[in-house]
Length: 86
Image 1: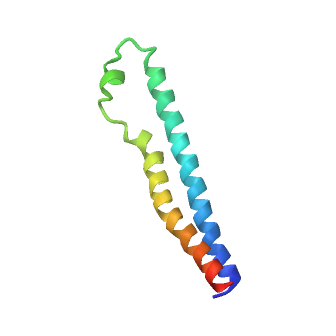
Image 2: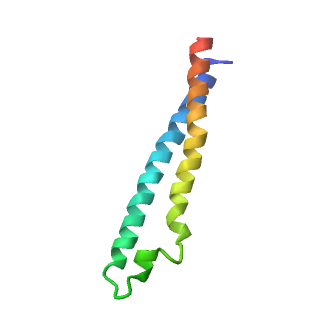
């Protein structure tokens, strides 16, 4: 295994972790913006009960969690391989 391969694995792990953090923060901002815009409406039942569930608001968060699950082991594996082989 070459040094470039270890660095690529480590770099992919770091990329996935950064993408996860960015998508989770984006999801929070979008949810907050959506539900704050509902406060100006007359019927605030949806704001209080969150019914019906808006799955597209949770999509970025779910993608971020999956990316975090992939990124952490990749970064650990790349770092360990980098230290062991070189």
